[in-house]
Amino acid sequence: MNVNISSKENLIPVIIPSYEPDERMTVLVKELAESGEHVVIVDDGSGEEFKVFFDKAKEFLAENGVILRHDVNKGKGAALKTAFKYVLDNMTEAVGTVTADSDGQHCVASINDVKKSLLENKDSLILGVRSLEGDDIPWKSKAGNAITKKVTRYVSGLDVSDTQTGLRGIPAKFMEELLSVKGDRFEFEMRMLLEAKGKYKIIEVPISTIYESKDHHSTHFNPFADSIRIYRVLGESFIRYIFSSLSSCVLDIALFSFLCFLLKGKYAGYIAIATVIARIVSATYNFALNYKMVFKSNEKIGKAAIKYVTLAVVQMALSAFLVTMGVKWLVVVPETAVKIVVDTCLFFMSYKIQQKFVYISRKPFMMSSGS
Image (cartoon, helix red, strand yellow):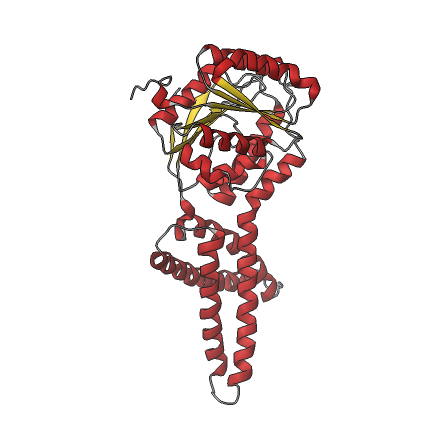
């Protein structure tokens, strides 16, 4: 589908969050201004010594842009939210926005590719994905993206080629939702991906990426502090899964003990009765927590419940079989030790099975678009 990306009804401003920029930002702004783009720049508390770059950018933009300012550095996520709110309040006709970094990594052609894809897919999150295979790519970018991509896929089930790209096309509706999403620094972009999952199509557009050199490319991304923030975001769902599992176990044991106390001496089969009731209650509790809190499922609750029960039965049977075989093969190893190893492995397997098949954890529709 051919669309006029410069027409008034297809307004998509370019947002550039910037902290302590250099001439690379002014070059990008000049090129965007020459192509008639509306630009929203956020000076994220850069300070007086960097004012010259923002003043120059303002000259290039004239009437087609605005510079918003934070008195102190608040982080990339906070800068994006400031720009989102400005666009939503002052450009109500905007289809959405395209975000680009101020360090010269994103050229106008790539920005236009993402913009065009957003116009063709107005209810989608567009990711400008970099090719990180060349010799000129900084090793930190290669390693960081490779690790984060694998962790993201396991923990969230989200398979994205470039989790850290700053070139994104964001529809107006999603911009409004993102204003209430936690995170003010680089981790906000990861939260954006997790929020989009299952609610918006995620479309990948290949882009060219420009680096000065693989050893001297400057960035405000702190490999230690910002990576911790990102992985903490990724780990939240798995931590909730651990809490759900442990609290269910505690509930099961506590309820079993209480029922045994109540029923002992009254019913010959009190242990079996207590076991069944405690397991039904704790399993229902675990299912509800996983459905609402851990996987945030959009699956029909009845269908998810059937799959959950099926998984529980299969997992219990598999545990019994593997522990039995383990004890038989490893004669000198106690049954409890074998059970701990087996059930730990099944615990991690169950997480992935619940994520991908039981709750369908807001499964995204992924597709790629050629540039």
